[in-house]
Length: 211
Image (tube, rainbow, N blue to C red; front, top):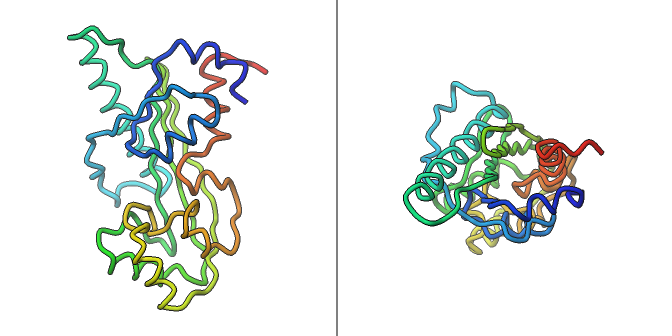
């Protein structure tokens, strides 16, 4: 989908405001093979009560991107390295019954989260920000996910793998956590944490492709 603008992107310094090799691989798979990883130092401490779910993840993604863009631009101004051209950032959250489920800090919290989600449908929101110098795009995609049923022993066995501890909602759909998923309604990559179709569409618009 990015084919018509890849020749332009190939001349740009493209940075992913993340430390996730998984997100880097996803971006590389759509043609941005030279994308750099640069984890943001933004503390992700926005007051949740002041935002709707979709707004919260989009605003968090925006602050991640802004921090990385400013830091790398500052480094470029004082050294012999080029500044960033395109910075991409994302933030993902799981919600159910008006409650936000972020990344569990302990195995016990992960077990509790997963126990609540089992046998029910939840919504995954991923907010994305694309910054190309002064041009900025901010959006949120949502996907409905239904978990099947699982026993406490099955949940604990998954928690024991360690996979849930750095995943929103305590699971990774692209990993072992995907075995809990009975059905999804929406873009699978929104759940993974990087909605590729929408990102590709917005990048094409940013680089003035009118196809």
